Each structure stands twice: as structure tokens, then as C-alpha cells.
Image 1 (tube, helix red, strand yellow):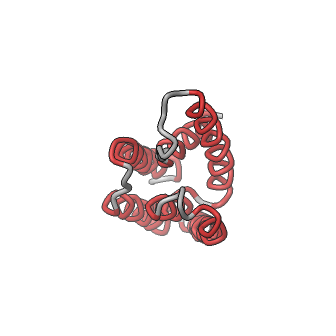
Image 2 (cartoon, rainbow, N blue to C red):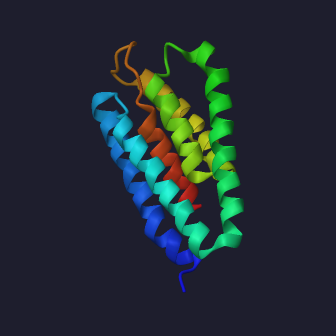
Length: 153
């Protein structure tokens, strides 16, 4: 019999690797490719599908968390778009909504709070460094570090 732990052991590392790839690409190119966001969504949908077949009693809860995480970060993106439209790229908003769906509401809220603190810390440290005033900090690596912090603590 396949249980929730077995399903999580298979799919959680895949999501982590996909987020790491997005973070590395964003760090190097300041772009978040749609392909990797789509693969993360497909991975989460397969995860939910396996829950539906093997742990049906948990499916509704996890599906609701995923949809709530997506909607929560969609609303956050809409509210933050106007004041930050020159500093936050469209790929960052797509990343947030995809991430919200993939990790669900309670976790995405914690990761976003940690991400914001890390981004402010990076911004403060960059002001003391030799970065150009117009340098844009890639957000995906910050989200990835926040996700790791959330997993570890």
C-alpha cells in the first residue's frame, strides 16, 4: 500500500529541484522560464493525482491548501504590482503563484515572510557593496533559500 509519506518522498524532492533550477536561472539571467514553472505545476498535479488514488481522504485537504496558496499569492501579486511594478518582474509574480499552488497556503505564507526578510537583508547588504544602483536582485534564489529555511526549521 502506498501511503502519504511515500508519495511525499517521491514528489517533494522533484519540486525542490525544479525550484533550485529556477533560482539558478534567475540568478544568472534574471529570467524565470515558463517551462520550469510549468513542470513544477505538472509535478504538483501528479502529486495530487497520486493522493487522489492512494490517499483519497487526504486529497481534499491538500487540494484546498494548494488552491488557497495560489489564490493568496495571486491576491498578493495583484496588490503589490502597482507599488513595485518597476522592481518586481512579471516572472517573479508567476513564480509566486506557482509556488503558492505547489506548497499550499500555510507553507507559502511562511516562505513569503522569510523571503521578504531575506530580500530586504540582501538589499541592505548590496547598498554597502559595489553593486550598481540599478542592479535588480533576482527573487527566485531568495524564495529558494526561504523554502530551505522553512523545510529545515
